[in-house]
Image 1 (cartoon, helix red, strand yellow):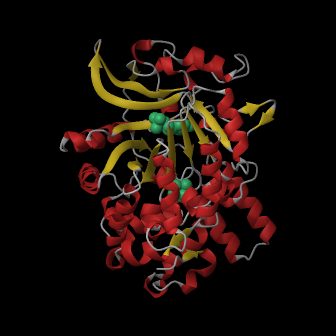
Image 2: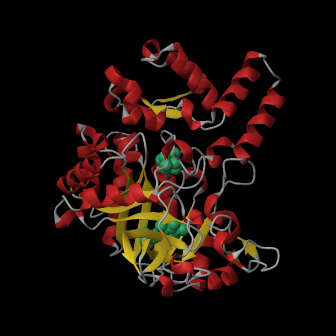
Length: 450
Ligand SMILES: *Cc1c(COP(=O)(O)O)cnc(C)c1O
Ligand code: SF4
């Protein structure tokens, strides 16, 4: 099958266009002014159930939904289009609206971009000791766009917020200076949109550097769900699989970090074949997904998804909590609910599925998991735990926040037992070089720097 993308400019040519109600078309037009919209012929033809598309998880996952914007936001854009406002006015309005949606959560730009000999490495993020994220320039788009994507600003041209790196030699020099780094995580966008020849150059370059510290190359991708033919019948599929083979034959671990949100993504002949072809190269596939209201907010869905993954030979890895950006109001669930969904799913699956960890917030200080809701010293509390920390000493120590049934993110939590701060906060502030006088207070500093 040949890859075909559908976006707002060619929505009229979509084979299913006639099945969309006028209201849906209007919603797509308005909301895709703010959030990026793209889907693929594979998603449209093989994943979405068009008989009941408005409730279909894959439809909601790719097609902009009216409630992703506040009614006032939706109406304001709708009115501007009706009045045929000028392009510049509309663009300015949309830009301002986007800036209210916390486009750059977790302080990725400010805090995770390293420098090498005074030069900012804008295509690299380094937050946790062992793993460096690499954003190759040619991999900064995706076969389709997820409506909930926390990297949405990079697909909308929000200026100055884009990561990308042309040169892999800067990455290699940086690793040489930081021998604690064992893992390179190639990410995007989706690096699997790159031509095999480009990935080959990067990989050859990395392997030729012969870094003894390098143990693992990871590739973050949603291509198994949006375009599994990447590993089957694209003109360069064979070349791509050969690159995977080259990595594993060099004795490096290759981990495909597959983003999979719903078991329906695992049901087609194409995805099964793609998984098999990848595994035949010696690569492992690990899976991760955020928990999303309107898509997978149900323990039965997660249990089924993890079981299917084990059947196919994939390893469940992370359940994330939806980030505090973009349309979180539409997709987010409370921390309490995320804990319930995780636990109810986790307890009904085989131990082989329980390699999964979560539910986890990727926040400024680190990946923080809701480990439980319990009573201690007469108070109802969330028990939290770092799975990854900006300082690795923080990992694995339980700590406690006052129970809050409405909280959806770390910045809404306060320490339990009337304590003034979480145990890591003072040091975190120091690490972030937050000016104590001008900076946020201890209790609320998780958001800006998250
Ligand atoms: C999640 C993440 C990693 C990888 O963490 P693991 O727990 O090793 O999978 C690395 N860097 C950043 C910035 C991350 O968010
Ligand atoms: S595939 Fe990943 S980066 Fe691309 S839109 Fe989806 S979540 Fe975002």
